[in-house]
Image (cartoon, rainbow, N blue to C red; front, top):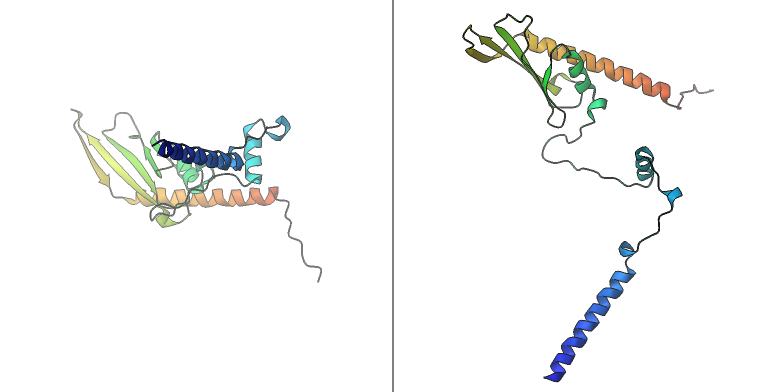
Length: 191
């Protein structure tokens, strides 16, 4: 019986010794002393250092969608839609969900009719099937009983065309700006 306990004790001691040796030899558990001159202070310098060192995250595609969405400030379709709909207050502007919904809008305060515009983004590319525009019309009587329905008119296409035109203009401006800022110059061949 004494030898059984001794054998278990020796096995456990040996196992702990192996684990401690393994942990000690791993680089993941070694703490390196940081030098102030090697660690950037501001966020921009930290991001730049991480990019140079290849650190960062990559989010893979999920589901059947395109999976590649830019930030709202660099997406011409998004910026163009905000610019085209600047005459009406926005209720929802969800870039992650790809939707912009305006508040109810009427030309005058006494009007019984008002409209709400909803834009769904289906793609980041500037193309006609990249966005879907729906307009809802609300008609209220003097007792404030309202009827809301999906409106089918040319206004949908007019808004879509205005967004596409503005997005194309923004993309051209961005290309010109990048070309001007670029150090790369095309020189003709001497031949």
